[in-house]
Length: 379
Image (cartoon, rainbow, N blue to C red):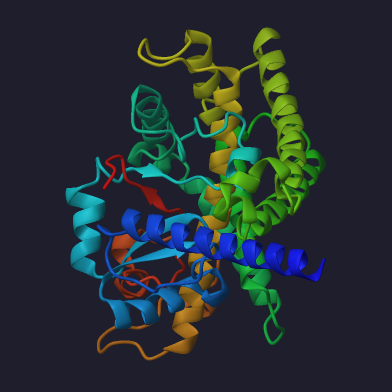
């Protein structure tokens, strides 16, 4: 019996060694054309050695392996580009090749139509239609100029609150988030929600949903590193994201129904982003790509989430950078220094071209990496 047990153990360890050698051989063959990078461990790659601050971790790896390196995270292989020259080639010269995005499982779960939105859709007729709608109706210079009064009102309200808290600690990130949420939602469907209390309730619910959504999107997910585990949703991230999507759907459905009811009653409707989306949905698209009610809700979610979280984070990062390095260059002064003397009544929101000092600060953003890009050509 002991001899049989010993033989079984020997066979088990021999099989395990064979599988490990086979795995290393396949991995080495697959990565032979990849840039150099850390070796990592079998199965998990470099996951155990990744620092939470990815931009700091990647800078250290770039100093060791060069401006372009490969790194294996679980069963995925990533290529990291760190130099300005290579970034220019990837993002500008080779943009058609690297234009697609890698959408994490959490992003797929919360999206109304999987990856067929402006963030995750591959370059094609549908993506061009979504991009054209956003560029022409939401982000055009004329559209932004028409919303100047709205932005001025909201920022004056925020500045008034900050002045009232002089000498007290203030959560700038939270205040900027509320400010941008008010601006974005008013731009999207400003005339749809009637009472001020109802607007406040919707805004409060949005803040909670977006905070939870961004927390889950930023959480490491085993399903992203090991796609074979995705159906099991071991961390419950997909289930939580699906609940968030359902809550977003209820809010958007209510807002859309209120707008449609107003149109049917003959009420005068504002020409805002929602009105343009509903018009495009009624037309069915542009003849090259379809546009459905699901696309309407998807674009509204993209604008609410990206328009609030990204902008408020940008302001927070910029202020943090100014606090860390308060010295202004010769001949320049931090904008806003004269605001208390002039007061808020006569203050106007300056254009970016009139804020050279702030633009210089934002010209070198100290920010973590965003969504990865996917190559459309296999190496």
